[in-house]
Length: 277
Image (cartoon, rainbow, N blue to C red; front, side, top):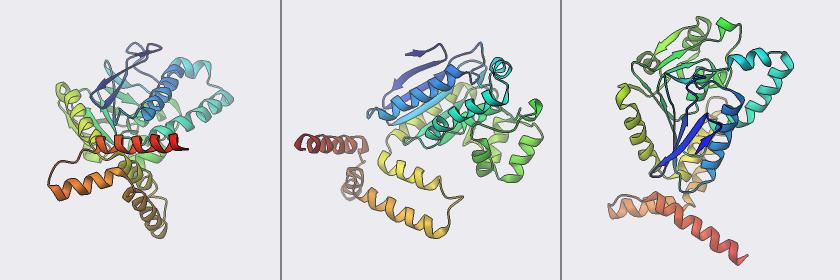
């Protein structure tokens, strides 16, 4: 499927693939790109056969950040305010996406493009082509696309300040050393490594993963007592899932767990209940 010439989607087993393909525009965040990301993630969230996402780009850039044409045409304060008001809901949905997300940074990523990369639960970058450029200060702008939230949490405040205020460029290895990404991978191996990791994560118990992601996302601004309460409630929900029963049975029987089948059984049970109602 091709969305407005900016996004292509596909599947690899139980992995949904989202590829940014506007090579001419260096996969910048045009309105069609923003809308396409929002709708594509929503569709894959609702598809029970997709258990993980692989997000990457095509061409020399993963995402070049803000679209320069849009900045010129919609650069007044009110238009910018409206654009970012529209951005907040779908970006929050991406950051809290209930299934595993693996990102492969295939090339240069600039400014807000880094924010898109950081929606990934696991992020890899090509060791030669993958570069992270903090371009905000060059335009007299400040970090956006969630980076005020994600960047300091990943690399610490001191490194985040140096990166943004100094308009620094990090290689894939520097980004990995700073804790921004999981690792730098040989460019020719990036796709295979990301798909391999996506398949591994698709085999996870999605119900438990989703709960863990939701709770861990609150760890930096939540006190110990509240976090213990979240863990209590989340674990109680996890105990009620078919995935937990499958995991326990597999451990006792010393066999691999089939969490995908457990999810299917859970869905079948819900369908039967709905029919009875």
